[in-house]
Length: 210
Length: 210
DNA sequence: GTAGCGATGTATCGGGCCGATACATCGGGG
DNA sequence: CCCCGATGTATCGGCCCGATACATCGCTAC
Image (cartoon, rainbow over all chains, first blue to last red; front, side):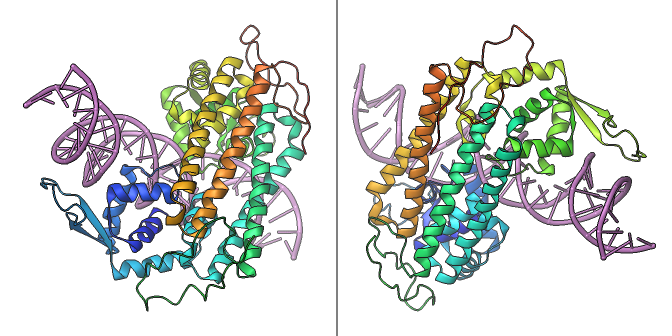
């Protein structure tokens, strides 16, 4: 999961670990509060070993001071890494539909073609619906067996599940009719890839108002 | 976290692993789908080593057949284990306020005294409020920097956070005025603690839902 | 000036939890 | 009679986390 997120961010611009962590935190703030360094650095090492990213010392953005005793390490995505990123984005395993997996995929939807977006949204919807049904079962069948607080917890969970299904339904409808999310702001932004890199991102059929 | 949940369930009645997993799934269905055996069995071993639970072979509920080649293993909580459970229930570290930690604690609120309940609810509220503020910041300050999908994700997360704060607020109010959750069903059940232990579980008024 | 402090920055270690996998028994339906 | 799905116990590799350690930079306070 982290792999996908890191590759995605490095595709926009090279970064060092600390920066990466902050970007991760704002981009995936809904999913996980902040990635631990105990996760980040080993993962970066792993990606490097696999050849998806490369490490280059000292950073040009820090021009004047920085006597560089121990320079920061800047990570950059490779061609193989970009390929890997595209693969991860498009392919959907079961882990694509849990909270974390879905969140990461969704966060990079602007780099995903519409067919894949729909596939993922529908997969996620199915997942949440199953969860919702499970909770309904518990609340109807096992109601007498559980104490008031446990029941309240289930009720709150059920409410959240129902709400998410509705949210997903709305997103799916929008996708089908060729609209961007909905949003109050949000430019079409992020060119990121050089011209002539990937076929995705269909004509971008504008977006009309809510 | 799992430790607390297992101790809590075994306090009600002895069980074997498979059963434990199912109970865990229904009681904590909102928190984690189903606990993995790769987690459960090592944890049970750990609890056993620590002396909180004991393992006894073959199960009386399976009276007639069961030629018992490899009997099921029934786990039972010890006196030390009950003490440990009480400690874990009352003490609140930072991990008590994340999604999983809070969920488990809340699920055992009927075994917790009111003061602790309030402390935990307020701690959780603070946590969720921080998260909410973080999301608001991103949405106002970094809005132009993020694509439409990422923004939509943040918006949805913000909505969920606001909703949870309201939910917690309601629960806190109820606690202060000496009411149980709200519930549609759910007996006062589970004596569990010997008489003369805690004052909790006051009467239960009502409150409707939409 | 210098001492502390908070932000920036890289890195490791022990441990919890997960998914995949293996293996074994039991009741029932085809 | 045989296979299948539910019941049941158990291990292994691997991801990810929190705690910890260490070093530099720019700022404020004394």
